[in-house]
Image (cartoon, rainbow, N blue to C red; front, side, top):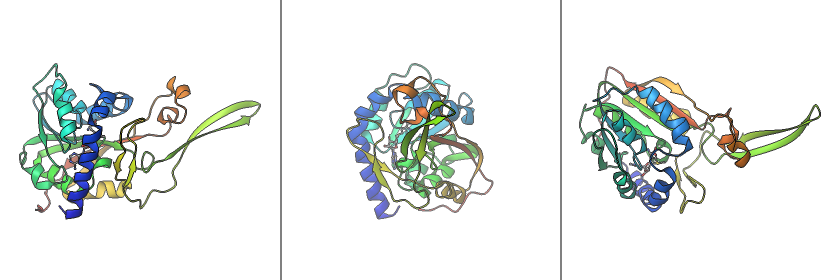
Length: 276
Ligand SMILES: C[S@@+](CC[C@H](N)C(=O)[O-])C[C@H]1O[C@@H](n2cnc3c(N)ncnc32)[C@H](O)[C@@H]1O
């Protein structure tokens, strides 16, 4: 890991430590609407977990996905860099399945990931965190090292084309054939080359955190370079509903625009040369 990357990773760690209590209260046991309606269903579908499988959840936060996978019968290890988030995760009661094993790991550190067990996991998951992680090269190389042959990596992340770099929510009203029609839209001004930026993860949170916008090519290329191939992709969006009226300038008013991108990757035959 480069020294700059290490420093950035430590900055991100402290941002998440500071907001851990707020985040946990916001997300609760099963997550917010993003998790319940978009992320969890798609991740579970892509993962097709079999009871007894060993799974590593990277950047687990407060453990929403880790607990769910354990309840489905998986043997789950969950890692995050933020001690605050890990403490919150551990404080949740787990009603079913084997207890999740939590560890503090910087997931940009290939060697630290590999130390969890080379070729030891049937699957690795990463839910709504790739956009929060400063460097993906070490992460993907580490994922390849911990996966068993035939293993899979399943992710859900903020959709890089839409839900990235502070898109602007808008609405306009027009008289169309004598009817007033409101149209909600999203304005995306830039996509290709944007520096990391502070932004809010939720309304009224104590502090913003750093987002690492990556166009699709930059998001996926380090995974391909590490030896993973993409074999499934989904772009879930919200169903139109009542909350549209209450929160007009939000994702809930944009059922045609997916805020989440989810995918599954598999190990190719040949593993790449290992780094550090
Ligand atoms: C938005 S939260 C997502 C948490 C969880 N996966 C979920 O779906 O609720 C992002 C998480 O990424 C973690 N994170 C960011 N950079 C990390 C790193 N380098 N190593 C480990 N965790 C990291 C943060 O600490 C935070 O818990």
